[in-house]
Length: 274
Image (cartoon, rainbow, N blue to C red; front, side, top):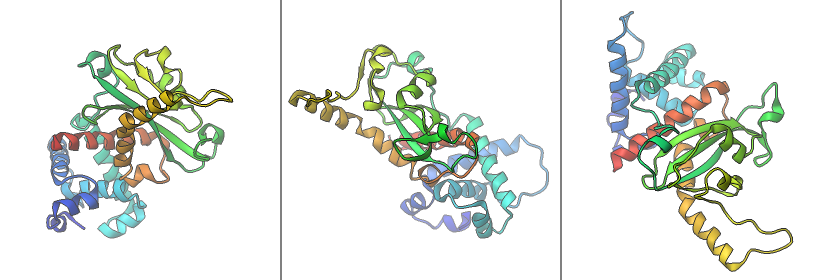
């Protein structure tokens, strides 16, 4: 479906098909247009700017192979690959679709409460170093993404990525994410020991060996789970794009860029809804 046909879609249909609202799409096209105006013209492209953005959105949303998408758009596989990479790089470099970053947790306005969570994306079995990517939790080779979420707005503040074998708490340590002392952080049981780095943190109470949790501890865990459930909702929104929700087939070095870009698109649409 080319841009001329996509214009006839209802707003909810456009969102279902491409994963973003029409206003977000138009902003992406505007960023591409500004980038193109500063480049020397070298012939007419096979696809318009609108169609280039739709190709990239279709790739992230459906995660079909370049070959299958190329057949739909009547171009070559290499053209689809170049278009997707061009759109990704241009949007990230523009600064309009970028996360605040971990420095904002200390230097920016003090956030009242944040949730930190790790989601895993399955990857192809590596040819080398398979053990480093094997997740004992998922029983498969994965790539981990750590998300820090502002609970007041639901926006993603920053991300960090690591190999599937790395423990969630170890990923937190290596990411060097630190919170303001007034910020309350909520985490799951994978972050036991976090209070050593951030005293104002909340993690579930662990059941003592050979014993049981008290009624008060159970209520505490339930209340904590209710407060941080928004992190699970954010993970679900990101994995609407099947490039993050299904087995990742591409080279791993571009995974972080794509995850950050999709997270920034999610934040942008939160701003539209506010």
